[in-house]
Image (tube, rainbow, N blue to C red):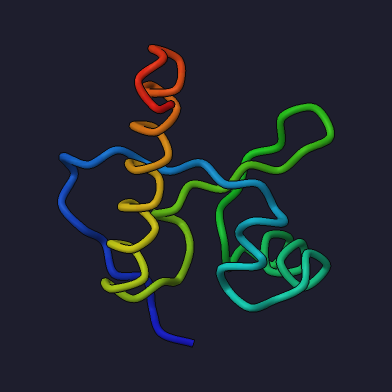
Length: 87
């Protein structure tokens, strides 16, 4: 597994659920919980759910860019639907 590659600090962080982060990394949620306990990945627990910031995942630059593009596209789509501009 490659080491994390930080990007500039002027970007929005993407907060991921444990299941989403596990899917992105190609691991099971159980494996990801082990990595959190072992200190390999930082995560915060809110109630009973884990939240992991995208910058805390060991991703390549290309994976980080793709993740952020999907997050931005999803946010824009949600705004357009809320304003009634999609259909």
